[in-house]
Length: 390
Ligand SMILES: Cc1cc2nc3c(=O)[nH]c(=O)nc-3n(C[C@H](O)[C@H](O)[C@H](O)COP(=O)(O)OP(=O)(O)OC[C@H]3O[C@@H](n4cnc5c(N)ncnc54)[C@H](O)[C@@H]3O)c2cc1C
Image 1 (cartoon, rainbow, N blue to C red):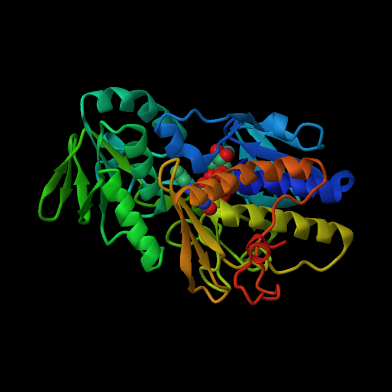
Image 2: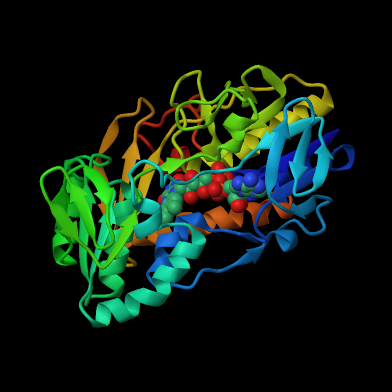
């Protein structure tokens, strides 16, 4: 069986490594990715704030596993069994789409021309200009009150106390936390002297953001207002939602295409709807599960539904603080949060574990674990074992 995996991010890399472990001799695995390096996307805001990223070569990460790594941009997907990578046609028996997401720069006019995003090139540019801006007491406006916006604003304010940092969101901050978490977040923004702005952005101009009733001036604007998926998937005729995510069933098959699976940010499970948010916390389990199902097909066994349940939001607030919000299996929030240094340590552990997971796969250990709905619930819900799915 020829399996081609598109995208060397969290989902694609773990899928390739798990499949090599489970069915190594019986499958030809090709991992295709545009960049030579694995991009640790969850640390891009840290990079923008001046913490140098650890770059890992994808070729080295899959060395000696039997996986062929092909660096190149996928420009066409023919669902009948072929992808175009640069000038080369790659045939497949099974395809795994793991092309991830990128900052949505089309939702508001002016983002592309006047704002930075958390893409590697833009983060590197921010990293080089923020020290000078901080020395002049310049103003950074982070647009987007989601977790990425909050993590970025706090990271900048902590790293550069000379910067004037504002966080602009269309609604109130902290909806992902219960009351204690929300209070902690607001106290942290206060401590770091981050000002809050509220309003819906109409347009971004050279040095100001236009809202319905006023403008907000900036020296640097960082846009974190949502993510979109490569247009290639829609253009290839695969079924997609309004965001461009490929629709998959619980076995991770693309609806109507038994030979194609999709994982990570590029995929949206339609049964049950919205069961998987975008995040490496979902991309890793989806990648591992897709590999397990491919291995089952090779062994002639029935495929299994992905059994996943959301367990935690881990948010960093700079390097020394954070908020860890746990969830019950029914989706409701646990009425307490971990904050401060312990939260920062947990978040750092989680970030490191996303890189440890592929390393463990290489030494024949399933490094990607997750919480499952079918697991028995403990009385102290959710327990550490349950959250980790072990
Ligand atoms: C600043 C920041 C902080 C985050 N923090 C968290 C967090 O704390 N927790 C969490 O769960 N999630 C977090 N996320 C989200 C997380 O990074 C993504 O959900 C995750 O990267 C998705 O993994 P993926 O494998 O689907 O795609 P990606 O990691 O995006 O990988 C996709 C891969 O496909 C490649 N690719 C794309 N198009 C092509 C093409 N045409 N041809 C060839 N290759 C292509 C890309 O180069 C990339 O290597 C954060 C994101 C950001 C930006």
